[in-house]
Image (cartoon, rainbow, N blue to C red; front, side, top):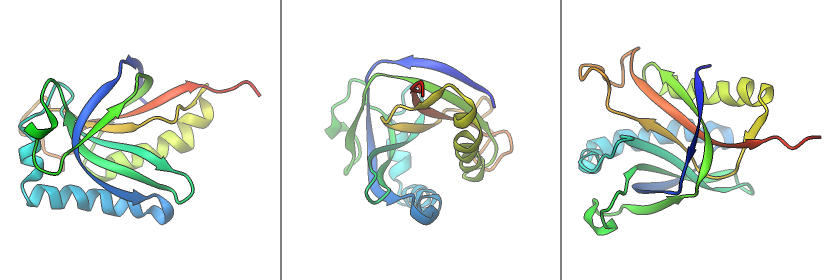
Length: 170
């Protein structure tokens, strides 16, 4: 698996948010549908006008272990803009400073990124010296090297950013 370790200061994003659950793989169905719906209603295009260097993001945060729920946001970096400058309904998402394992993903969405998430948790975490740090993780959908590459292309590039910490010695 191709990855790098990156340290980031606190980041702020603005995004369109809903809650979902990972129970029964519900999130694997409703998150792609959320993207489809927000593309159809024009929200993603409006939000994309504010893209920073990272591009569009899908942020998972506010985990509730008691019911396996979490908030998910289609977001962009806030930059110096006020939240009221963003499309209606956007919320501010603050992500604390963290060290991230950043995994490169290539392939058509959403299958490629869903497969990568599974591989990270079933293969990489058990074999690595790291564990999830418990803060928000996210997907990054940057501008593509070739504008002809779409999210359905086998060459579509994205990333998964997971906050990490060293595993406790046990």
